[in-house]
Length: 275
Image (tube, rainbow, N blue to C red):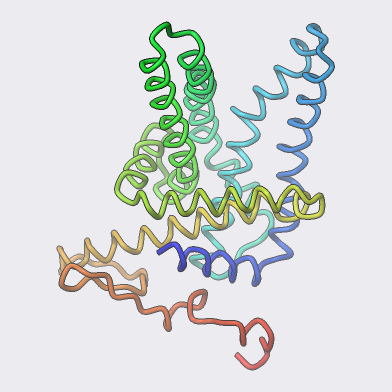
């Protein structure tokens, strides 16, 4: 499923590159610029500057601008994947429609995002019994990893399910627990993309939008998996949405040839007019 997620994300980006670049510029201005200013303020080591400038900027980024732009991009990606069409303004529409669950999720994730890294350091350095301290530190480290993996799916879940923050976080956590290898593989891909995004031109034009397209593509593949299982268990259920997969004999049978984003290869990129 990871390979399908990557392939879908590539062709979504390829087909809608201009829109995603425009959306990423907005993401960069609202997310990266304030974070860079906040980090620069921290580096001054001036307590007043840190309290009055750095802390508010970084707090706003974590709880407001990152969630808002992520859910906006997720809404845009949903339209591009499901309808093969969409516009740059879909990002702003998504930010308006899902602002409440997005910001609520940002605030809910703030406490563990702060406490878990501190716990890793504290338990490893301040517990008198070394093996216990390291064990507790490792447990907190695994908590950080789980939190990061859950965070990937929260905003696509909010958009797809039109759910609140708690329900979106719950859905994301269940997806990670039920699909650990896909989640870890997706996390690795995002980490690698993060390294590529250090390049200024990539950071400004593609970094955030491509990352959200990737996790939205993975969510789409997972939703098709569970929909196929549901249809197999309830054959009389009515659903007109094509999912390009069936569940037979406890196996998923994918029909990639019928999916516009999954039935293309290198030839389609080099000679698109021959498609």
